Image (cartoon, rainbow, N blue to C red):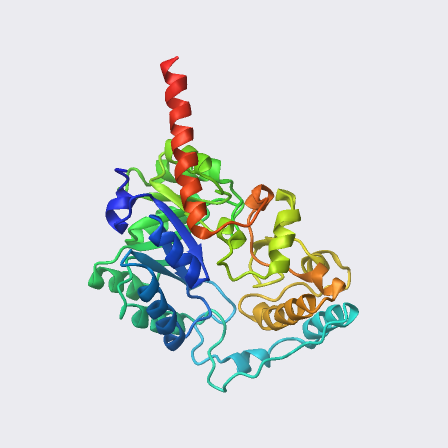
Amino acid sequence: MKSPICEMLGVEFPLVAFSHCRDVVAAVSRAGGFGVLGATGHSPDSVRRELKWIDDHVDGKPYGLDVLIPENMATAGESGVTYKSLRARVPLQHSAFARALLEKAGVILADRDVPDDQPQPFDPMRAMDVLEAAFEHPIKLIANALGVPPPAMIDMGKRHGVPVAALVGAREHAIRQVNAGVDILVVQGTEAGGHCGEVTTLVLVPEVLHAIKAIRDVPVLAAGGIMNGAQMAACMAMGAAGAWTGSVWLATVESETSEIFREKMIEATSRDAVRSKSRTGKPARQLRSAWTEAWERDPASPGALPMPMQSLISENALRSVDRAAAAGNPRAREMVTYFVGQGVGLIDSVRSAGQVVQDFKREFIDAVEHLNDLMAE
């Protein structure tokens, strides 16, 4: 395929797969796509271990790394913020509300012990240290979400000859990213799982392409709700150079998700993927559950704290929920949630990641041939 993404990333098919699971990353790249490891939450040492494993299992195929360096969060501009110092700022009413939810479901909160110097969640300096460690490996892309990558990240990409991608959810964000010097735009509609805006993929992709045309020629990867090759072909018909996907890989045998969450994905409809601040403090699309409903709709809810403080409440609580659900607690199962997009309504089975890539290729070709047949008539 002649897509600029194929040339930039060294792949045969411009399907990019974002996953927190190294197995998915390696499997997708081996199958002809491009796997991207989500490194949020990793330390330099842990990312080295993950990338060493990928190097050993990817058969020399290219892959990339994604970090999350928010431009706007409650601790912006502060230095030396640790997990423990930030936890001390969490209001008692928020901690009490979360504990009450767990107690009502019969879930014991297993608080984890962290080192005194453990950085805050989404710490920008930790993310840059992770990137430095990642460049000890042959990564072929670095990507950032929730804002313009810092100049040091863009410079790092240029120094290593590696493209820098950035996720955007609005036209004005795309313009800022292009002016900042990013190499690839991931234009993500509201259908997407995780942090997302309010504009649909079908509208946002052409809107961004039109807006950046006069500034600079930057390839666009369409993202948000793309679960099959026909949707990918539709986005490329609008002018995208490829697709960035995430939710579809959660329903693979290799993914990091639990068996219970996979079952809930198969049961879910597209309306069960809701935008909620209940996990990170910013609007993020995830599977509707008793957890999201309580934070968003319960009159007693104190409301989510701003990023990164809400994560100090949610992550330990939801880990405890997952353990209790796996042990057979039905009320805990009702609380199980994870980031997933509206494409969850298209999930009806669990496949291998390699099979998903092959299915995308076949569906893409079928869609293109369908359009050609229409033109021939």
